Amino acid sequence: MTIGFVIGESKPTMVRAQTARPLAVGEYVIIDSTEKKILGLVEKSSVSSAAFADVQNYEEAFESKEIAESNIRDKSYISNIGILGFLDGLKKGTPVLPAIPPIPGTAILTATKEDLGVIFGPNEEVWIKIGKLLRNNTIDAKINLDKIVSRHLGILAMTGMGKSNLVALITKEIAKLKGTVIIFDYHNDYTFLDIPKINVIDAKINPRLLDADALSEVLEIRENANVQQRVLRVALTQTVKESKEFWNKLEREVDIIINSDDKKEKENRNSAYRVKDKIDDAQHRFADILDPDMGYPLSFIKEGRANVINISELSEKQANVALAFYLQELLRDRKESSAAKNRRSKKQRDYKFEWPIFVIVEEAHVFIPKERDTTAKYWAAKIAREGRKFGMGLGIVSQRPRSVDLNVLSQMGSFAIMKIIQEDDQRQIASATESTSRELITQLTSLNVGDAILVGQWVNLPSLVHIEEVKEKKTGSDQSAVSQWASGKKMDGIAVESTQDLIQKDLLLE
Image (tube, rainbow, N blue to C red; front, side):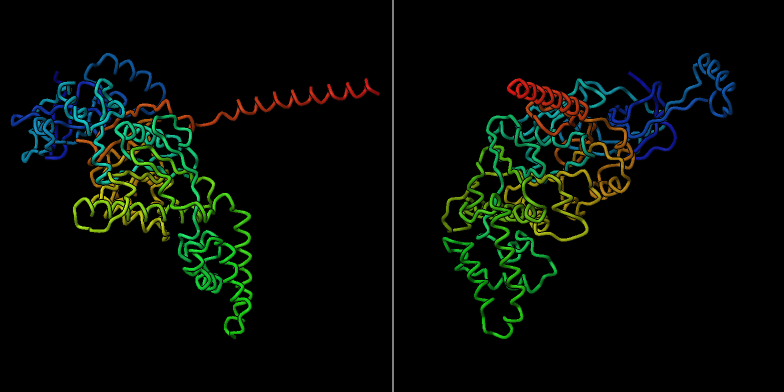
């Protein structure tokens, strides 16, 4: 069905169209070129009225309304349509742009389910359904899981727009395929995810596995406390790390520095006392988090499962140390496992992960910040660069894209971008995702909860989709303050009544 025509100047990548009805941003259309049919995506849409063009007051507006209603030529519907490629090629997964722009006057047709179904819903095992096309809910929206493991994924949105729901959905689908997912959960959003094969781990830190700099962060020794850090480096010997009584042995090593007759060590005595206090304090304050007897942390992660590592009980510095340790060990494990499979290594060991893994880092702006270096950022950047060679995919999730390191963000081969209002965030997204047009970026403010723009290698074409809700996700939605206040008032009432009953009984006894 013809719904419009190409007008004005056209390009191999973009045309303007005059249409019979307003087209929705995100709607797909067919440009009926004489060469071949071309698929286009509406990226900008506007409506104007000749009758209302120069309205100055209410009376003129009232009169113009009658004129507009009686004149079928009054309304003008203009759309900017991005050219995605020849339709036949797109159905085969091969996007080819026309060398010659569509000629003005070329018909614009409605895209049918037959046109779009093959492109957005391939019937292959690597493609999983995550929702429907936003402007055509008869078409399934699918994503390629292979591409997010090999080329990484960024999920970006404001708080409450559906990030954790998408993470839960991807996790659920990978678990169905007996794949390994590891979520670093900073806000305890996924520990109650009710899906089969889920493995929830309360993160702990084994201090004997850390170097002195990492242990210094865990003990919360200040960054500029150079002498204290030096004392810890001297005290944390290999003998201490291998000791059955880690903390006692570490304290004894600090005592040696305190009691030393060496002139230089005497000058460091006060700093050594402070380090000892930090060690003692950590044993009491962080007893549930620091466990030198816990063994190898990766041994608690199960292959072929959805693993949620709950780091919500850790401070930001401790969470950074824990995340860095896990990322480093996971990458090392995958490197050695891949080398053994390729018979490039004669080293014999039991590899924890024989098959590819997908790691998701929530609150990426905390651990992979733009303005400063962290250990977790170093290892995340290394995985972003090298992970694809060893079957280790990285997913980063953030509500503040402007605060995420651009070098890491730009390594993400695929993106799900939900509602974003801040212009700084939009600019960062535009810098990281070259395939996203300016027109689509401007639409981010108008998206609703669960709506997303999908771009990159995990989809055949840029698309606006509505992501289906994961019913098994029990937490993460907005809480009702009103209902909780009401519940609190009821409890207060019960408490008052109970207290009054006790008073009455006491009076009777008297």
